[in-house]
Length: 121
Picture (tube, rainbow, N blue to C red):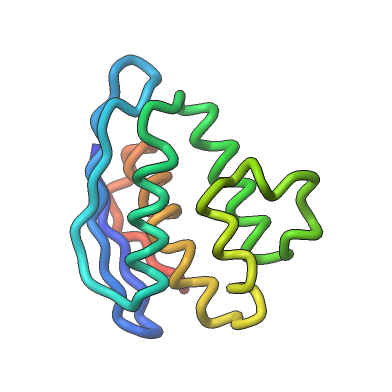
C-alpha cells in the first residue's frame, strides 16, 4: 500500500509505503521533503505503527490528532504515546498542525487504498 501527501501551505511532500502481513503493519517507510516538524512526525509515526495491527494504528492516529489539535489535556494519558508526546505543543501553532499530521493522513489514505494525493487543505 502506498500514498502521496502534500501540504501546499509550506510545500511538505511525503510518500508513504506500507507492507501488511494480514492486519499487521509489517513494514513502513516514507520518502519526501519538508519542514522539521513534518519530517520528524513521519519518522516517529513510522516507528510507532510498525508491528501494530490496523486497529491499533487507527487508535494511535486518533490519539495523535487529538494531541496536536486539542492538546495533551484532552487525553487521559499522554505518556503512553511515547516519543509522539513531543508534539504536544504543536497545537499552539495552527499552521504547524498540518505539518505534523500530513504523514498520518497519508498513512490512512495508503491503508484505505485511496489513490488521490492527500492534502492538508
